[in-house]
Length: 294
Length: 294
Image (cartoon, rainbow over the protein chains, first blue to last red):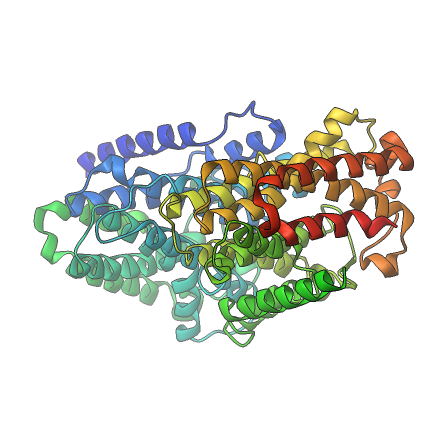
């Protein structure tokens, strides 16, 4: 795992450098919006999604540089969704990645606009991708936009808000997790594969990997919310229970939730078989995510 | 002008039908978000921007159907910006297009998400454009995303918020109008021209037309805010003065503001010369916008 930590660190550094180069400088006018965008984007995120994009490109023997616009675009989309989810009228969170949330520092109005701008920037950056023989530019844009849209990422947040204080079934919970978490993780991986001109069969295998990894990731996130401190998480712990959010631990109990995380991770791993050694980093990342709760 | 009214009515109907077909049905789950998106999108807007897209395609001898994804995308982008601008933490408006604003009906949280979803939908729809020989898909996406981004549309809203209660110079005012209004009007027209594979010279001429039309449009909007009733406008009248917003009438006085609107319209008209009769509708729309204040 030491090797993986080194890999994650290096890749995160590359992603940060690329994001910094894509984004307008903090001094670009109007300064407020660019400072707010950069405040939330460079808050010390682990860059999991863009690293998955790059690792998926690697698994398909593609070029890391070719995958970088996609990698940065998914991180921009992810960050915008955090900024808006944290707003007082949504999850009302004061802490994110260990720092005060965007609206705490810049005010609600600028936080709404900074989220809007990060979302829009995702498409400015994505438009700088190089289409491949199998995947034209339209496929890249549709991939990210459909995943970010009203039936997936945004729809998941709606279901999440509407589910607070209600007893949800496991099936309903899975639907929220699919939309809110698994969809963007899956697209992060698919975009990497597409930038490497992956065969349809390989794209499909990585889609199954991403879907199961995404569900495992959300189950583990729910577990950590119960078992970890605010300090360790960098965001408010125990939040889910406070707003009576339906979560895996709440619906199934901690032990069964842990088993589910393992089951999803196993399924994810199985999908990587055809890639052999090329998928080493994807495999290591899946293991690493699973071990977060120990 | 009777002919123009008929033209505007027919084109608006075509745009509405296309938007209806592109958007997820109101019953698509989660229902709340799709109802909120449709509530704001089908609130009786005049569809000025998408009609300009179609008229620009016409002026370049292009096909209306080819321009429709771009036309719908700019209307989606425009509507999202209205939904977010009306939020309590922004301009705090209760009335839009003669009806209660989105957050008044669906709550602040769903209004934020509906705006996000309309913005994202713009790119889902835009990705369905047919690129042309001169303009690849990346050019379409970059056009809309850069215009919607932190240095134009969103940046303009930031400058507008920051300008409230301040004495602005005419130059500062123009910068806000360029970013907030002229940029999206210009892109609406450019996307129509691009979908018609316009020559660089024609695209440039239409850019000058759009820029000047956009500035004229905002000056007239500012004048109407002073001279018209809330009922007539379908949005709160006298709002600019209430929040001490810098506007053309406030900075220059009504008479000089009217002259500026004429001056910008003249410049816009001059840019249409090379198009001859093909630009009939663009010309008529520019005249019609100018005459709104009589």
